[in-house]
Length: 428
Image 1 (cartoon, rainbow, N blue to C red):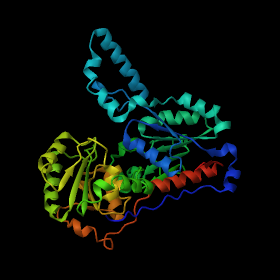
Image 2 (tube, one colour):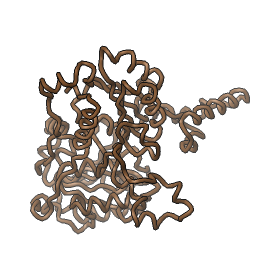
Image 3 (cartoon, one colour):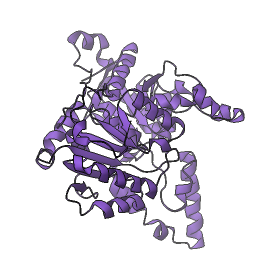
Image 4 (cartoon, one colour):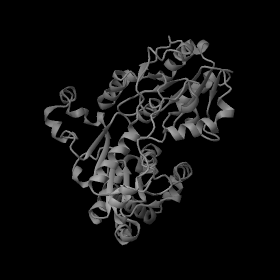
Protein backbone atom coordinates (compact mmCIF):
# COMPACT_ATOMS: atom_id res chain seq x y z
CA UNK A 1 0.00 0.00 0.00
CA UNK A 2 1.34 3.38 -0.97
CA UNK A 3 1.63 5.58 2.16
CA UNK A 4 -1.02 8.21 2.72
CA UNK A 5 0.66 11.63 2.71
CA UNK A 6 -2.18 13.55 4.27
CA UNK A 7 -1.22 16.66 6.27
CA UNK A 8 -2.41 16.77 9.83
CA UNK A 9 -5.13 19.33 10.62
CA UNK A 10 -3.65 22.57 11.99
CA UNK A 11 -6.12 22.65 14.87
CA UNK A 12 -4.62 22.24 18.32
CA UNK A 13 -5.88 22.54 21.87
CA UNK A 14 -6.23 26.02 23.29
CA UNK A 15 -3.90 27.32 25.92
CA UNK A 16 -5.16 28.47 29.32
CA UNK A 17 -4.44 32.06 28.26
CA UNK A 18 -6.67 31.70 25.21
CA UNK A 19 -9.50 30.27 27.29
CA UNK A 20 -9.19 33.12 29.78
CA UNK A 21 -9.08 35.75 27.04
CA UNK A 22 -12.17 34.37 25.30
CA UNK A 23 -14.21 34.39 28.49
CA UNK A 24 -17.02 32.05 29.41
CA UNK A 25 -19.41 33.61 26.87
CA UNK A 26 -16.97 33.40 23.95
CA UNK A 27 -16.30 29.66 23.83
CA UNK A 28 -18.10 27.63 21.15
CA UNK A 29 -18.99 24.17 22.42
CA UNK A 30 -21.87 23.23 20.10
CA UNK A 31 -22.72 23.22 16.41
CA UNK A 32 -25.94 23.12 14.44
CA UNK A 33 -25.56 21.58 10.99
CA UNK A 34 -28.22 22.47 8.42
CA UNK A 35 -28.33 19.80 5.70
CA UNK A 36 -30.45 19.14 2.65
CA UNK A 37 -30.74 15.34 2.82
CA UNK A 38 -27.89 14.70 0.38
CA UNK A 39 -24.72 13.13 1.73
CA UNK A 40 -22.44 15.11 -0.60
CA UNK A 41 -23.54 18.40 0.99
CA UNK A 42 -23.95 17.18 4.57
CA UNK A 43 -20.56 15.43 4.63
CA UNK A 44 -18.91 18.75 3.84
CA UNK A 45 -20.46 20.26 6.98
CA UNK A 46 -19.59 17.30 9.18
CA UNK A 47 -16.06 17.18 7.78
CA UNK A 48 -15.60 20.82 8.79
CA UNK A 49 -17.04 20.09 12.25
CA UNK A 50 -14.49 17.32 12.72
CA UNK A 51 -11.62 19.49 11.50
CA UNK A 52 -12.62 22.10 14.08
CA UNK A 53 -12.32 19.50 16.84
CA UNK A 54 -16.07 19.52 17.57
CA UNK A 55 -16.87 15.98 16.49
CA UNK A 56 -19.78 14.69 18.53
CA UNK A 57 -20.91 18.20 19.49
CA UNK A 58 -23.20 18.81 16.53
CA UNK A 59 -26.93 18.45 15.96
CA UNK A 60 -28.17 17.79 12.42
CA UNK A 61 -31.27 19.52 11.07
CA UNK A 62 -32.52 19.27 7.51
CA UNK A 63 -34.33 21.41 4.98
CA UNK A 64 -36.25 18.87 2.90
CA UNK A 65 -38.27 19.21 -0.26
CA UNK A 66 -41.37 17.21 -1.18
CA UNK A 67 -40.35 14.13 -3.15
CA UNK A 68 -41.91 11.86 -5.73
CA UNK A 69 -44.25 12.42 -8.64
CA UNK A 70 -44.26 15.89 -10.14
CA UNK A 71 -41.90 17.21 -7.43
CA UNK A 72 -38.83 16.10 -9.37
CA UNK A 73 -39.63 18.86 -11.87
CA UNK A 74 -40.05 21.56 -9.19
CA UNK A 75 -36.57 21.69 -7.65
CA UNK A 76 -35.90 25.04 -9.30
CA UNK A 77 -38.47 26.65 -6.97
CA UNK A 78 -37.54 28.09 -3.57
CA UNK A 79 -38.15 25.46 -0.89
CA UNK A 80 -40.95 27.38 0.86
CA UNK A 81 -42.86 27.91 -2.41
CA UNK A 82 -42.27 24.29 -3.43
CA UNK A 83 -43.81 23.05 -0.16
CA UNK A 84 -46.86 25.32 -0.54
CA UNK A 85 -47.39 24.19 -4.12
CA UNK A 86 -47.04 20.55 -3.09
CA UNK A 87 -49.69 21.09 -0.39
CA UNK A 88 -52.09 22.65 -2.92
CA UNK A 89 -51.53 19.81 -5.39
CA UNK A 90 -52.17 17.22 -2.70
CA UNK A 91 -55.37 18.93 -1.61
CA UNK A 92 -56.60 19.07 -5.20
CA UNK A 93 -55.80 15.38 -5.63
CA UNK A 94 -57.61 14.50 -2.40
CA UNK A 95 -60.75 16.41 -3.35
CA UNK A 96 -60.69 14.98 -6.88
CA UNK A 97 -60.31 11.43 -5.57
CA UNK A 98 -56.80 10.85 -6.97
CA UNK A 99 -54.72 8.44 -4.86
CA UNK A 100 -51.62 10.60 -4.69
CA UNK A 101 -49.92 8.54 -1.97
CA UNK A 102 -50.34 5.34 -3.93
CA UNK A 103 -48.71 6.89 -6.97
CA UNK A 104 -45.82 8.41 -5.04
CA UNK A 105 -45.16 5.57 -2.60
CA UNK A 106 -42.49 4.10 -4.87
CA UNK A 107 -40.27 7.08 -4.21
CA UNK A 108 -40.82 7.84 -0.53
CA UNK A 109 -39.50 4.56 1.01
CA UNK A 110 -36.20 4.90 -0.88
CA UNK A 111 -35.68 8.43 0.41
CA UNK A 112 -36.37 7.46 4.02
CA UNK A 113 -34.32 4.29 3.92
CA UNK A 114 -31.28 5.70 2.15
CA UNK A 115 -31.01 9.14 3.70
CA UNK A 116 -32.66 8.71 7.07
CA UNK A 117 -34.86 11.76 6.53
CA UNK A 118 -37.48 10.55 9.00
CA UNK A 119 -34.97 10.48 11.87
CA UNK A 120 -33.74 14.09 11.50
CA UNK A 121 -35.57 17.19 12.71
CA UNK A 122 -36.80 19.64 10.07
CA UNK A 123 -34.88 22.91 10.38
CA UNK A 124 -36.97 25.74 11.87
CA UNK A 125 -35.09 29.04 11.83
CA UNK A 126 -37.17 30.66 14.58
CA UNK A 127 -36.77 27.74 16.98
CA UNK A 128 -33.02 27.41 16.40
CA UNK A 129 -32.49 31.17 16.78
CA UNK A 130 -34.55 31.19 19.99
CA UNK A 131 -32.48 28.31 21.35
CA UNK A 132 -29.26 30.21 20.52
CA UNK A 133 -30.49 33.35 22.33
CA UNK A 134 -31.97 31.60 25.36
CA UNK A 135 -28.94 29.41 26.04
CA UNK A 136 -26.22 31.91 25.19
CA UNK A 137 -25.25 32.79 28.77
CA UNK A 138 -25.08 29.16 29.84
CA UNK A 139 -23.77 27.45 26.69
CA UNK A 140 -21.99 30.26 24.83
CA UNK A 141 -22.23 31.10 21.12
CA UNK A 142 -23.75 28.72 18.58
CA UNK A 143 -21.82 27.77 15.45
CA UNK A 144 -24.15 27.11 12.50
CA UNK A 145 -22.77 25.34 9.42
CA UNK A 146 -24.97 24.88 6.35
CA UNK A 147 -24.41 23.53 2.86
CA UNK A 148 -26.45 23.56 -0.32
CA UNK A 149 -28.81 25.98 -2.05
CA UNK A 150 -31.91 24.81 -0.16
CA UNK A 151 -30.36 25.68 3.23
CA UNK A 152 -29.53 29.31 2.44
CA UNK A 153 -32.85 30.84 3.48
CA UNK A 154 -33.09 28.99 6.82
CA UNK A 155 -29.42 29.51 7.72
CA UNK A 156 -29.46 33.25 6.94
CA UNK A 157 -32.72 33.64 8.87
CA UNK A 158 -31.11 32.07 11.96
CA UNK A 159 -28.27 34.59 11.67
CA UNK A 160 -30.69 37.50 11.25
CA UNK A 161 -32.79 36.47 14.26
CA UNK A 162 -29.80 35.81 16.58
CA UNK A 163 -27.04 38.03 15.25
CA UNK A 164 -25.19 38.39 18.55
CA UNK A 165 -25.38 34.71 19.44
CA UNK A 166 -24.58 32.87 16.20
CA UNK A 167 -21.60 32.47 13.89
CA UNK A 168 -22.80 31.29 10.47
CA UNK A 169 -20.69 29.39 7.93
CA UNK A 170 -22.27 28.67 4.53
CA UNK A 171 -20.57 26.02 2.38
CA UNK A 172 -21.04 26.36 -1.39
CA UNK A 173 -21.57 29.78 -2.92
CA UNK A 174 -24.94 31.37 -2.01
CA UNK A 175 -24.80 33.49 -5.18
CA UNK A 176 -25.72 36.85 -3.64
CA UNK A 177 -25.85 38.97 -0.46
CA UNK A 178 -22.77 37.45 1.13
CA UNK A 179 -23.12 39.82 4.09
CA UNK A 180 -25.86 37.51 5.39
CA UNK A 181 -23.10 35.08 6.44
CA UNK A 182 -20.07 35.36 8.70
CA UNK A 183 -18.08 33.15 6.32
CA UNK A 184 -18.67 31.49 2.96
CA UNK A 185 -16.53 28.48 1.98
CA UNK A 186 -16.63 27.70 -1.71
CA UNK A 187 -14.41 26.19 -4.44
CA UNK A 188 -12.32 28.48 -6.60
CA UNK A 189 -14.10 27.23 -9.72
CA UNK A 190 -17.37 28.83 -8.54
CA UNK A 191 -15.75 32.11 -9.64
CA UNK A 192 -15.04 30.81 -13.13
CA UNK A 193 -17.81 33.05 -14.63
CA UNK A 194 -15.67 36.08 -13.71
CA UNK A 195 -12.60 34.88 -15.62
CA UNK A 196 -11.95 36.20 -19.14
CA UNK A 197 -12.59 32.74 -20.59
CA UNK A 198 -15.80 32.38 -18.60
CA UNK A 199 -17.00 35.84 -19.68
CA UNK A 200 -16.51 34.93 -23.32
CA UNK A 201 -18.88 31.99 -22.88
CA UNK A 202 -21.71 34.19 -21.56
CA UNK A 203 -23.75 36.36 -23.95
CA UNK A 204 -23.50 39.98 -22.83
CA UNK A 205 -27.25 40.27 -22.17
CA UNK A 206 -27.10 37.32 -19.73
CA UNK A 207 -24.04 38.40 -17.74
CA UNK A 208 -26.00 40.31 -15.09
CA UNK A 209 -27.89 37.09 -14.30
CA UNK A 210 -24.77 34.94 -13.89
CA UNK A 211 -23.46 34.69 -10.34
CA UNK A 212 -21.22 35.39 -8.59
CA UNK A 213 -20.98 38.89 -10.03
CA UNK A 214 -18.09 40.17 -7.91
CA UNK A 215 -14.68 38.80 -6.90
CA UNK A 216 -14.47 37.10 -3.48
CA UNK A 217 -14.45 39.50 -0.53
CA UNK A 218 -13.55 39.12 3.14
CA UNK A 219 -16.53 36.81 3.69
CA UNK A 220 -15.16 34.16 1.31
CA UNK A 221 -12.72 31.29 1.86
CA UNK A 222 -11.67 29.65 -1.39
CA UNK A 223 -10.85 25.95 -1.70
CA UNK A 224 -9.59 23.82 -4.57
CA UNK A 225 -12.26 21.15 -4.24
CA UNK A 226 -15.00 20.04 -1.88
CA UNK A 227 -14.74 19.60 1.87
CA UNK A 228 -15.15 16.00 3.05
CA UNK A 229 -14.74 13.45 5.85
CA UNK A 230 -11.50 11.84 4.66
CA UNK A 231 -9.08 13.38 7.14
CA UNK A 232 -5.97 11.67 8.50
CA UNK A 233 -7.74 10.21 11.54
CA UNK A 234 -10.61 8.86 9.42
CA UNK A 235 -8.25 7.19 6.96
CA UNK A 236 -6.17 5.64 9.72
CA UNK A 237 -9.35 4.29 11.29
CA UNK A 238 -10.58 2.97 7.93
CA UNK A 239 -7.24 1.29 7.30
CA UNK A 240 -7.70 -0.60 10.56
CA UNK A 241 -11.38 -1.45 10.02
CA UNK A 242 -10.81 -2.75 6.47
CA UNK A 243 -7.44 -4.38 7.16
CA UNK A 244 -8.66 -7.99 7.06
CA UNK A 245 -10.51 -7.53 3.77
CA UNK A 246 -8.10 -5.30 1.85
CA UNK A 247 -4.58 -5.63 3.27
CA UNK A 248 -3.90 -9.09 1.87
CA UNK A 249 -5.18 -8.42 -1.65
CA UNK A 250 -2.69 -8.77 -4.51
CA UNK A 251 -1.04 -5.45 -5.31
CA UNK A 252 -1.38 -3.01 -6.84
CA UNK A 253 -4.98 -2.34 -5.87
CA UNK A 254 -6.76 -0.14 -8.40
CA UNK A 255 -9.99 1.44 -7.13
CA UNK A 256 -12.52 2.66 -9.71
CA UNK A 257 -15.16 5.14 -8.48
CA UNK A 258 -18.06 5.85 -10.83
CA UNK A 259 -20.39 8.79 -10.24
CA UNK A 260 -23.19 9.88 -12.54
CA UNK A 261 -23.80 12.33 -15.38
CA UNK A 262 -24.60 15.96 -14.62
CA UNK A 263 -25.74 18.86 -16.78
CA UNK A 264 -22.11 19.98 -17.04
CA UNK A 265 -20.58 16.51 -17.47
CA UNK A 266 -22.83 14.29 -19.54
CA UNK A 267 -22.27 10.63 -20.34
CA UNK A 268 -24.01 7.28 -20.46
CA UNK A 269 -23.42 3.80 -21.85
CA UNK A 270 -20.73 5.19 -24.18
CA UNK A 271 -18.45 6.09 -21.27
CA UNK A 272 -19.10 2.72 -19.61
CA UNK A 273 -17.97 0.91 -22.76
CA UNK A 274 -14.92 3.18 -23.05
CA UNK A 275 -14.02 2.47 -19.41
CA UNK A 276 -14.38 -1.30 -19.94
CA UNK A 277 -11.98 -1.24 -22.88
CA UNK A 278 -9.43 0.78 -20.91
CA UNK A 279 -9.68 -1.42 -17.81
CA UNK A 280 -9.25 -4.54 -19.94
CA UNK A 281 -6.04 -3.03 -21.28
CA UNK A 282 -4.54 -2.32 -17.83
CA UNK A 283 -5.88 -5.36 -15.99
CA UNK A 284 -2.66 -7.30 -16.58
CA UNK A 285 -0.75 -4.73 -14.48
CA UNK A 286 -3.18 -4.81 -11.53
CA UNK A 287 -3.20 -7.18 -8.60
CA UNK A 288 -6.89 -6.48 -7.96
CA UNK A 289 -9.51 -4.00 -9.18
CA UNK A 290 -12.41 -2.86 -7.02
CA UNK A 291 -15.29 -0.92 -8.58
CA UNK A 292 -17.86 1.18 -6.69
CA UNK A 293 -20.94 3.00 -7.97
CA UNK A 294 -22.58 6.05 -6.42
CA UNK A 295 -26.28 6.72 -5.97
CA UNK A 296 -26.13 8.87 -9.10
CA UNK A 297 -24.77 6.10 -11.32
CA UNK A 298 -27.34 5.29 -14.05
CA UNK A 299 -28.54 1.69 -14.05
CA UNK A 300 -27.56 1.28 -17.70
CA UNK A 301 -23.95 2.16 -16.78
CA UNK A 302 -23.74 -0.20 -13.80
CA UNK A 303 -25.36 -3.06 -15.73
CA UNK A 304 -22.80 -2.84 -18.55
CA UNK A 305 -19.89 -3.00 -16.09
CA UNK A 306 -21.50 -5.79 -14.04
CA UNK A 307 -22.07 -7.87 -17.15
CA UNK A 308 -18.47 -7.46 -18.27
CA UNK A 309 -16.61 -7.95 -14.97
CA UNK A 310 -18.88 -9.89 -12.59
CA UNK A 311 -17.20 -13.21 -13.45
CA UNK A 312 -13.64 -11.85 -13.57
CA UNK A 313 -11.71 -13.14 -10.51
CA UNK A 314 -9.48 -10.05 -10.50
CA UNK A 315 -12.40 -7.62 -10.25
CA UNK A 316 -14.72 -6.98 -7.30
CA UNK A 317 -17.81 -4.81 -7.74
CA UNK A 318 -19.54 -3.47 -4.65
CA UNK A 319 -23.28 -3.98 -5.17
CA UNK A 320 -24.47 -1.61 -2.46
CA UNK A 321 -25.06 -4.38 0.06
CA UNK A 322 -23.23 -4.42 3.38
CA UNK A 323 -20.86 -1.75 4.71
CA UNK A 324 -19.75 0.87 2.20
CA UNK A 325 -16.04 0.24 1.47
CA UNK A 326 -15.40 3.79 0.24
CA UNK A 327 -13.22 4.93 3.16
CA UNK A 328 -11.39 1.59 3.16
CA UNK A 329 -10.70 2.05 -0.54
CA UNK A 330 -9.26 5.52 0.07
CA UNK A 331 -6.97 4.10 2.75
CA UNK A 332 -5.77 0.95 0.96
CA UNK A 333 -5.82 1.78 -2.77
CA UNK A 334 -2.56 2.17 -4.66
CA UNK A 335 -4.19 4.21 -7.45
CA UNK A 336 -7.62 5.49 -8.46
CA UNK A 337 -9.69 5.85 -11.61
CA UNK A 338 -12.55 8.31 -11.07
CA UNK A 339 -15.22 9.70 -13.39
CA UNK A 340 -14.82 13.44 -13.93
CA UNK A 341 -18.33 14.40 -12.80
CA UNK A 342 -17.71 14.01 -9.06
CA UNK A 343 -15.95 16.94 -7.36
CA UNK A 344 -16.31 15.17 -4.00
CA UNK A 345 -14.75 11.84 -5.02
CA UNK A 346 -11.87 13.57 -6.78
CA UNK A 347 -11.27 15.87 -3.79
CA UNK A 348 -11.14 12.87 -1.43
CA UNK A 349 -8.78 10.86 -3.63
CA UNK A 350 -6.46 13.85 -4.15
CA UNK A 351 -6.21 14.15 -0.37
CA UNK A 352 -4.28 10.86 -0.20
CA UNK A 353 -1.33 11.91 -2.38
CA UNK A 354 -1.75 8.75 -4.51
CA UNK A 355 -2.04 8.58 -8.33
CA UNK A 356 -5.49 9.66 -9.51
CA UNK A 357 -6.58 8.96 -13.08
CA UNK A 358 -9.67 10.72 -14.46
CA UNK A 359 -11.99 9.47 -17.17
CA UNK A 360 -14.43 11.73 -18.99
CA UNK A 361 -12.81 15.11 -18.22
CA UNK A 362 -13.17 16.13 -21.87
CA UNK A 363 -16.95 15.93 -21.41
CA UNK A 364 -17.00 18.52 -18.62
CA UNK A 365 -18.01 22.07 -19.45
CA UNK A 366 -18.22 25.44 -17.73
CA UNK A 367 -16.78 25.69 -14.21
CA UNK A 368 -16.34 21.92 -13.89
CA UNK A 369 -13.87 21.97 -16.76
CA UNK A 370 -12.03 24.67 -14.82
CA UNK A 371 -11.93 22.38 -11.77
CA UNK A 372 -10.40 19.58 -13.85
CA UNK A 373 -7.83 22.02 -15.20
CA UNK A 374 -6.86 23.14 -11.70
CA UNK A 375 -6.24 19.53 -10.59
CA UNK A 376 -4.10 18.83 -13.67
CA UNK A 377 -2.06 21.99 -13.11
CA UNK A 378 -1.38 20.90 -9.53
CA UNK A 379 -0.16 17.55 -10.86
CA UNK A 380 -2.81 15.72 -8.81
CA UNK A 381 -4.61 13.98 -11.69
CA UNK A 382 -3.86 12.60 -15.12
CA UNK A 383 -6.23 11.42 -17.86
CA UNK A 384 -6.92 7.67 -17.91
CA UNK A 385 -5.96 6.35 -21.34
CA UNK A 386 -5.92 2.57 -20.90
CA UNK A 387 -2.20 2.50 -21.68
CA UNK A 388 -1.02 2.82 -18.07
CA UNK A 389 1.13 0.33 -16.21
CA UNK A 390 -0.63 0.47 -12.83
CA UNK A 391 2.10 -1.58 -11.15
CA UNK A 392 4.62 1.07 -12.20
CA UNK A 393 2.42 3.86 -10.78
CA UNK A 394 3.12 2.52 -7.29
CA UNK A 395 6.78 3.47 -7.67
CA UNK A 396 6.68 6.76 -9.56
CA UNK A 397 6.41 9.09 -6.61
CA UNK A 398 9.39 11.04 -7.89
CA UNK A 399 7.86 11.70 -11.33
CA UNK A 400 4.27 11.96 -10.08
CA UNK A 401 4.35 13.85 -6.83
CA UNK A 402 1.92 16.51 -5.75
CA UNK A 403 0.93 18.29 -2.59
CA UNK A 404 -2.20 16.52 -1.33
CA UNK A 405 -5.31 18.64 -1.10
CA UNK A 406 -5.97 19.78 2.45
CA UNK A 407 -9.03 21.95 1.92
CA UNK A 408 -11.02 20.85 4.97
CA UNK A 409 -8.25 21.52 7.49
CA UNK A 410 -7.31 24.80 5.80
CA UNK A 411 -10.95 25.94 5.81
CA UNK A 412 -11.18 25.05 9.51
CA UNK A 413 -8.12 27.21 10.17
CA UNK A 414 -9.85 30.16 8.46
CA UNK A 415 -12.99 29.61 10.54
CA UNK A 416 -10.85 29.72 13.69
CA UNK A 417 -9.29 33.01 12.57
CA UNK A 418 -12.69 34.54 11.82
CA UNK A 419 -13.99 33.44 15.23
CA UNK A 420 -10.93 34.90 16.93
CA UNK A 421 -11.55 38.23 15.18
CA UNK A 422 -14.95 38.26 16.82
CA UNK A 423 -13.47 37.37 20.21
CA UNK A 424 -14.71 33.78 20.17
CA UNK A 425 -12.86 30.48 20.20
CA UNK A 426 -13.50 26.73 19.94
CA UNK A 427 -13.79 24.44 22.95
CA UNK A 428 -11.66 21.67 21.44
